[in-house]
Length: 331
Length: 279
Image (cartoon, rainbow over all chains, first blue to last red; front, side, top):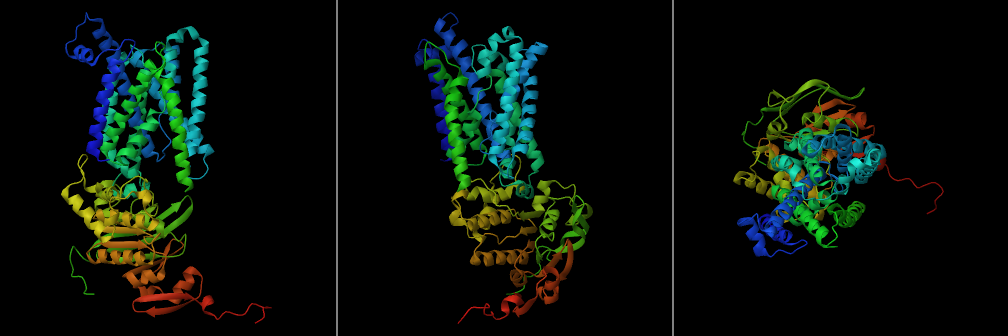
């Protein structure tokens, strides 16, 4: 697919999906009502209020989280040269959750302030994952060892999370949805503070895109082509972790977006270039927006959590990606 | 062939090593090596496995920091030069042929232009011209739209060489460039290396095949155990004495035009009938 037409098509899809998202819900709003609510907002019209206060905020939260998780995943996959890594499979999400829970328990933090413990947790989890992967590694380039390390780390941090919650369960009652990844009606509030992280992160990822592409040719070749591998790898990690954390703080540990979106983008648009990165961000947004719609409508009036829907679909996709990666290595 | 007229600073000093040593831990891999490389020359570095020739190339490319001595690129110390600045003067075809399977060949060759791009610009007319020229030289134009995963090892190696040429640097380092190539493209690649030298670049290649080295290189550096044993024109360096000393085998040397062919004595002895076998 040509980059221009691919991006145009996907943008149209995003707009169409956004419109659908605003329409769908307990009471279906017609496209006319949605446009009216956006353009001639009447605060006394209940449907207008629902469209803007509930659905539009959820739409923005879903789109934001999907986009930043996708870009984070793409950065990780490229600099670690591993098709299986993502914020969730490296344990970043779980580490963030543990530190958020600790931040709430020990310091009574809330809202956007939880970004800092979450960031610390994400960095810590990556370090643990690398350490664990180093211990289980068989051969220099074994893509599964990092995933195994990530899985071990995630398990470790999940039990730590459970432990902290069990000390004082009452305090974490309203956190249950967030723990599996959910988009609530008030999630836009931390986003008001955190969106610059995403904007800046994606902007810098685009600026760093070319040297990151070089790194996929191997450290030495990248260096002689003119990229400083340590700077590029460090920079990409320093972008990928806060990007993922900014989403985790808003919606919780939604998995698999960061794993799947880069694969879709690379498959449809090609391996390299800034347009692939933008396409990846939009794909991530589409995935989470669609998952949110599914969560709200599949078992209506019962609501599902986005994290549950993503885990169900994403788990299958993860298996498919592992199988193709292994088959390719065997060939 | 008509000797190339002096141009592009032909003969000017491109790269020099001053008393360079390198060690992994306590094991010395390179020991007090001083060498000069001029523009317009194709130099082959040969020697047995583990003699330090690949390490030497990595030190020259700034991928490894020498533990003593200095590397000068066009008179300026290599240490402290940014990778991007260095990449405009020096390019290298690394040995690993890693590349994402989904990458398109034209994009791969275009990677060679990174050092000449700004932070946000890529694909200027000049970049495209260099990419096209490099693909012409390496005869990979018909592969331009193919994905790396569809290429044979030899095709990928030629595309990576095209990428290195697209970099358009004055110094060209090649680490076992004939890897993965069949006979025709081995010679084509070595001919390309010679032509690049003739057009005023300093070309330095690590080669395994002594015949190839003697046939194409202007000068040969013979290494053993981290030291330079001999250097100079092929016929002077590739003597039976040197080969016996460095590789530990007795050979018969056969000069053949400018080439020196070394054949192992053991294989030239007529085959004896294995004992106990009847006619």
